[in-house]
Amino acid sequence: MKFVKRTLAAAATALLCSQAVAKNPLFDNVFTADPAAMVHDGKVYLYTGHDESPSNNVFFQMHDWLAFSSEDMVNWTQHGPIMKATDFKWAKGDAWAAHMIERDGTFYFYTTVRHKDDKPGFAIGVATSKSPLGPFVDARGSALVTDDMTKHTPNDWDDIDPAIWVEENGDTYMFFGNLMPKYVKLKDNLIELDGEIKTLDLPNFTEALWVHKKNEYYYVTYACEFPEKICYSMSKSIHGPWEFKGILNELAGNSETNHQSVITFKGKDYFFYHTGSLPPKPGQESGGRFRRSVAVEEMHYNEDGTIQRIHMTTEGVTEPAK
Image (cartoon, rainbow, N blue to C red; front, top):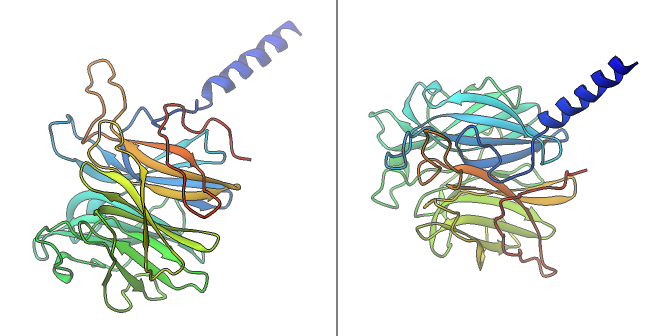
């Protein structure tokens, strides 16, 4: 009997030790960036970029995308890479921000990559899978958007950060851009454009568009100015006009960039973002501008539909969603 009690006690201790402790950043064993969260079948799936730069003095080195999942927003399972930038045969690398949606049992992964030199510059690709964890394969065999299609800025990275919004009637739009915010309707097959690429009027826009809806209002959040804060605007139509509401999230510690994701899960609203605040480990440089880490906070609305300012914490989400 004593042996059984000791065994049960040891098992309980091991179980407690295996449970993730709520904290920000969410993951301290890998550098993560550009969070894109999706709710599916009672779970949150979180997709991130993967910073692998050896130093904060060396520019972004990003080769693949990572996946994580949680049933309660506190305990997270790490699933590792789901796709590499070079899985797109037309791409030469740079796995930048991405976004995942699901329709009729197929998962569509919209990504930012650098195109090969026949169409130089950053491009948007789309891959598909029957599982939210992959494997994902190129759905088109070519880019969905290339730099030569939009020349609103002199930069070759003005077509980045795809974010997908699906209307209740199934109409689907892709928002994207750097320095110039853009959006375009997608065809029903979700892998072709359906009409012209349009621009939005958003003050101080830099990048990282994300669209969500709460009750009667649409919200577009985005990285504004540089170094980047997160700003937001509201509208009663996906086509605008958008009313600017100001700053939502301040500069995210030790990082010039920011990138956000907003979801509703089990009756609560959550705001994901990234920072450069991961402390150093023995023999390793700390987080920073090219070594970022994803964090999350609960998000709250005012009675008039505006969003309360996000206060970044080291504790993060401490109460499991039920």
